[in-house]
Image 1: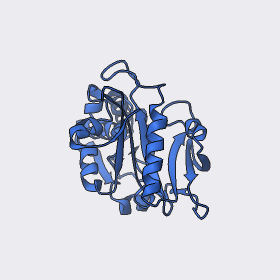
Image 2: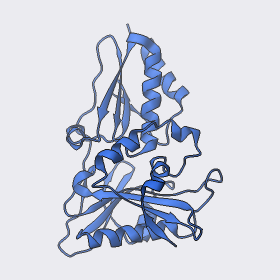
Image 3: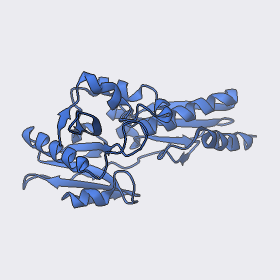
Length: 260
């Protein structure tokens, strides 16, 4: 199964996580493109193709020191995704493309001198399943709620990574509803929620203040320990899968009604 490096030819496809056909994905704006532009010298991207050259999968990874976990001399998989919808490109899953992408990334970072490769997974049986990484030889080393941190060591002296956990949360503003969006930019799903929250906030005039925390800046991320999230006052709302615009607006509206 051919695995290729990202080139300019496929950048727009990559910015939409292979879902350029999706109207919802277009709601994510240009956050991923901007993030990639700032981190192009660090981020490594490989694409999986079929024998005809059609792109059906992707993996993106970067040095752990530039990621949202703690570690040294490792690389970290931000995400791995094989297109599985009937719409658009069609279903490429269940054909070994994910395994081929992960193996290619492992070989790549070994050649770069990395001592191991880390990844995150979720306990529930959907996207980025921790159980799938375990089947590929990855060992769980840390947990953060429903998220599992896993890794594969390449050398005996490699040290396991750790989660960087939330350090603080945004506070409310007296007499206002404060909506705070944390967005790193690399994940369109997080950007969709961010964009919907920002748009919904604008409907309530000066009763709602929207605050943008740019966690693509690692110093800012380390200050908060939050990557992608939306808070209404000090309460976090679900960001993945993205809530609909209507649900986010209703949550903000309920808070507005409680204002004195």
